[in-house]
Image (tube, rainbow, N blue to C red; front, side, top):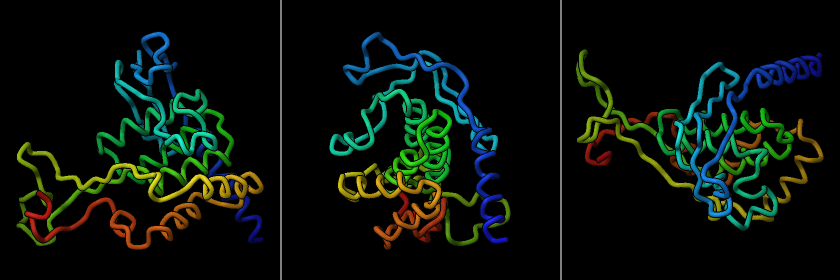
Length: 227
């Protein structure tokens, strides 16, 4: 019975992922830009995830391909590899703008990879890498009540929410040997390791990490800390 439940859950997840899809062709300009690493997206790139949430870039947006440190490229691939370029562009767009949570942004990267035909083992490897070492951010909100009509969020001088942010730090938290070992494990049994399992592995490597310990919003008692 338990195996049947697990199998049914797996089929349900696969069905949801099958509904996630990109719309539109990816055209990079100018010609030959992948050689210099400085490209523009000719048209908007649009992705609908498994929850029917739409993720979209701008037309004429700049891209330097996927953010892959050179040490990991023999395992993962080059920045402009076609199979994961769309997913990387969507991912980078939202990593910079912080309008969605970092967890949702990294998860949609995985869904985009699967939609583009990246094998599940490689997609999970790349998901682990971004969950462990990719950018992270939270919105800071007050920790004390401020009255019935006030907005319970810090704002900077420009009126925008205050975001605490950390740049990607792949090379400092993982190694090529770790990713190579995980790659072999995933290739042997891609279904046996879930995304949640990979998230737990990442958290074990950084047990005191601020972003893992907190949700998408963090209550701060001292406004000066946020500013």
